[in-house]
Length: 283
Image 1 (spheres, helix red, strand yellow):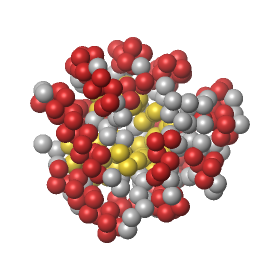
Image 2 (spheres, rainbow, N blue to C red):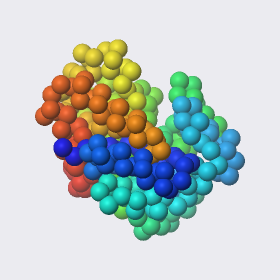
Image 3 (cartoon, one colour):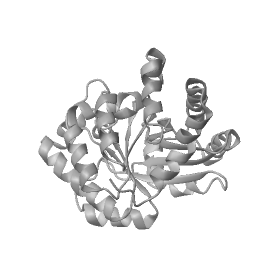
């Protein structure tokens, strides 16, 4: 079986030769494709950068790792077997959005990643857009809407990290406004209840199970029920960094054990990914 991971971050600070060996572990395990989230544009000051990075990932933010974000395409050619799909992580995009999205699309970015955190998130330890850019929530809505509009116009699938408990109405508006664009709202949107409403309402809406393993272990019945109900819309996502393939493999093994259903497992790791990456979904 071929596996696809819809959610990997482009952080590494080892040599390309070492990274090639790490990627080889993914190939051996059956990974055929991964979506890699690349922050190509970011502030020079690391403190400003860290305000828009969840605390759990701060240890990955080194000078070398940031430098590697600038030119990721050397890495994407390391493997003839594993297809690495670049997603432009646009969390720091503010100005000249139309020109920049067009430029990055021409460079070879296939999808778009958004970290939509307009206000501080103390649980994830993210300062948010208000602290980072001095923007109001309404201003962040407007800029994010423009980014989504441009990504949609270039046929880019979108991965949008967002807490649906706080910003569900805005996400509903985006899903309704761009029915031909497929959205992945990862981490079950931090609310299975609100996520269910959106999945029921919009066929261009997907979600992934990244960073939820500890919650699944605590409430296996509830999470299995959700995945069974939405088995055609849930993606496999590890939330790993490219320099730590063992996180991907561990998440794969866990989901296989957790589901105990090969048909649903195949949908999560393969079929649903193909549908999400295909364009022209309609609601």
